[in-house]
Image 1 (cartoon, rainbow, N blue to C red):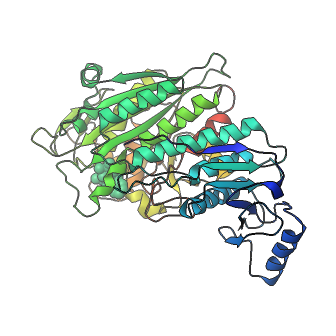
Image 2 (tube, rainbow, N blue to C red):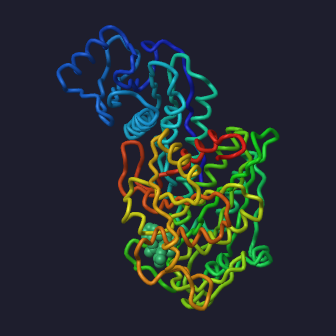
Amino acid sequence: MMRAIFMNISLNDGLLAELECDALVIPLDDGVSVGKEVDLQVAAMRKSGEVTGKLGEMTILHEPRELAASRLMLMGVDDALDANHAFRMAGQAVRAAQKRKFRRLAIALGDGQLIRAVAEGCAYGGYERPKYKSDDSASIVEEILIVAPGADTVAFESGRIVGESVNLTRRLVDTPANDLGPVEFADMAESMGKAAGLEVDVLDEPALEALGAGSLLSVAKGSARPPRLVRLSWDPDHVAGDSHLFLVGKGVTFDTGGLSLKPANSMEKMKYDMAGAATMLGAIIAIARLGIPQHVSCLLGLVENMPSGTATRPGDIVQAMNGKTIEVINTDAEGRLVLADALTYAVRQGATHLIDAATLTGAVSIALGAVNIGLMSNNESLQSHITASGREIGEQFWALPMNDEYLEPMKGDLSDLRNAGTDRKAGTITAAKFLEQFVDDTPWAHLDIAGTANLDKGLPNAPKGASGIAVRSLVRAVETWANGGLE
Ligand code: BES
Ligand code: MN
Ligand code: ZN
């Protein structure tokens, strides 16, 4: 069911007027001249106000004069074409072309500055969801030519690589849980990781028992499908500095809630509860393929949360890898139980910095909707580095407070900790305070992507379903990581 078909995107330096294609895409006001007649026509449409140039606006002209292209697609990009607008514009153009069954698309830019964002955007817009319909007709745009004077081929390739990694993340998230359990996810991570040049180590149930991962294992107990903890490492010969970042992902391949069963309404959405793991896998694959000179590892905590005769009961007390005991108040607060051991393991493996991503709480959608990723950290510079990286490429993070008082509801009575408080107040933050108990003093940031990893409605550049959010920001953050880490 998993397919890795990537469209053929290339740089081209041909004459715009002579490009034979189903559509030639022009971002408005980016200084592209397509020919005297057409330029005049576009100027007239702008002047009359029929074409406003707003981001998201798309105007298609048929049989444009003096051009070999069959159509001209004019794309609004607001006042200026920044990286974020370029990404969205390119993706929208590709998606529109796909819907119209165009085979060959050309995109003309004024210059090569934003080539990476455009390449990323093209790949993103060309995402194909896993195919389950019986009339499985391929609708892919076969070829995209980008004409961008002075474009750097390395930047172009980088954009393609990152876009493809985001799509890998999305495809995993969109795949139903019957086809993607912990073992299937681990196998996929192993083969994709190795192909990208990563070292991969898969820990099975006995290995996790030997490590004392009682917290993670307590979630897996209810399922017939065994858990996995996957480690992927990128350790290039020449690294800048001696920091070792760990990217840790929540990979609950399906979350029924366990014995604290979720209501039937919308439970099918919980196939996306492995989005944190898919995000981190996509990020480290991109980091390896880009050859970024930083030591980075990734840990994927893969389990299925099911109710059964062998499932953990509310009230059970389990012991985490770091020795702390946890009373399982609510088996639906399983993500933190998985991450607890994965974070401990990362610290033991020598992490100098930690970032985790998880669809951890419903509460983060209440607080931030689908607009911002919830960001919680014990380290100001790591926090602002992530926020700034997101801002560069158009993904938004909002830092939530982490006062000690928020830990109170997570303190145990009979045990050290409990996995849920007595009420829902500040649920996103209390979950993060719980996680913090497993990172020692390692600089750490937690991304709650429960509100942002899945699109309830399609966007101009994406169908509904997995958004692939945070992959691009994380890759950016690692690329711009200061030598020796952050201070
Ligand atoms: N995977 C869910 C988070 C979630 C819930 C995402 C609803 C999207 C929509 C997580 O495992 C969960 O169930 N969290 C509970 C925690 C609570 C029991 C303390 C929640 O948010 O309700
Ligand atoms: Mn849950
Ligand atoms: Zn969950």
